[in-house]
Image (cartoon, rainbow, N blue to C red; front, side, top):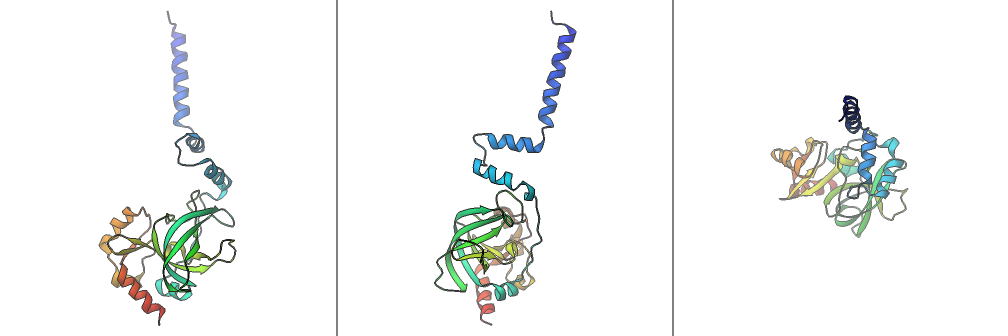
Length: 223
């Protein structure tokens, strides 16, 4: 016969185990998830993220650039297709280095073919509010020459997400952040909610007519 004491002991142990699983620290849960065979974070990514723990949740104020200023100050203005991720950097701040194919040159050397692009943030940190780029995506970017990167033809994004224009379906461009009053006349505001969801963005986006933007860009650069 099972004694009352045995039953009570069993109940208490079960309660303690349940409580420990419910109140497991978030860091422990993350470590456990990373150890699972089907976890999305690889061992190399886990090591990188661990090394960057101190800056994981860092935020840095990014200077916004409007359309006119970005066109004036950029070293090159190009249409690109992202080819691949080259590497993720952690110093002096989290960044991702992409290799990209140049599709169109509006400003800069017309002979540019393949370039490297530094984007703020990486897979281990929410350093910026905009999403990281991905291979096969196409963008119009306003870029400055990067002098501290070993890869040739390397550039950083002027104003980061405030000058990232992603090529979307149906002949539209989606400005990732900082809607620009200067572009209001070519804006399709009714589509903002749709493309924000479609592209997985969390910022206030601005949807623009693609060809009208290119015409406006050419006119601005030839003033």
